[in-house]
Amino acid sequence: MKYQYKEMPESMRGTYGEFAKNFGFDWKEFIMGIPTPMFLVTTYKSNGQPNATMQSWAGFTSANHGGGYYVILCSVNKCGHLYQSLNEKKVAVLNFISSDLYKTCMQTIQNNQFETNEITSSGLTVEKASWIEAPMVAECFMNLECQYMWEKEIVPGDDHVMICLEVVGGHIEKDYMEDMFGDKGVLYNVHYPINPEDVKEKGCDYVAALRKANQSYEY
Image (cartoon, rainbow, N blue to C red; front, top):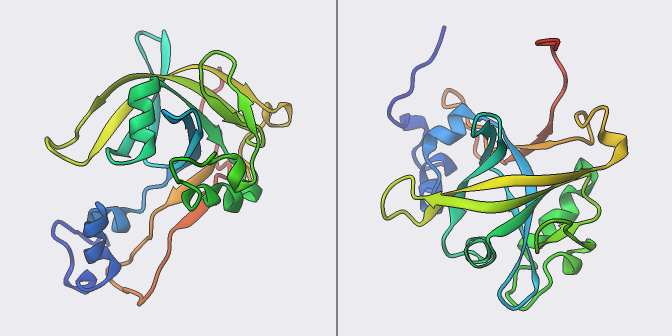
């Protein structure tokens, strides 16, 4: 049996699934519960201080007939430091965090004042990127250096945009070269899953890691 949802179920009215619209989230996001990769985006602000933004809602793909690797940041707030920095500097680093670094990286959300070094003030270490003018986080097991390509509003006049970045190069810890999945591998954001058939009074987001299930193709 499959339940069907086209309009928001009555059971979700008055819950987070309804008033989350005030924060830019549609009710369907909570029912579908599709996980997205989580990472820390780092740039330089116009005053030269490092900016760090926890980011999910992103997708990765190859394009240009295999001539490039790209990431689409699906939801970047026009009012935030990340949007301003990307438009000014045209570069950024995506820093992939292991589960033991999660709480430390989340501190960047509180340490986000314009005059603050958002990396060091959160207990992390700044490294200089190799090919672009942007800071990297030394403790992260993978760092992807990226350059800005384009941006587009999903809906005209929206306060969030999609931004496309091209991955120009990467750094990967040797211990992760064989397998970067498992308990300390790539993290995924699972956004506040709600079961409309059994709505709970409270809920929360989850952070998850991947587990290998099946082998797909052998090349």
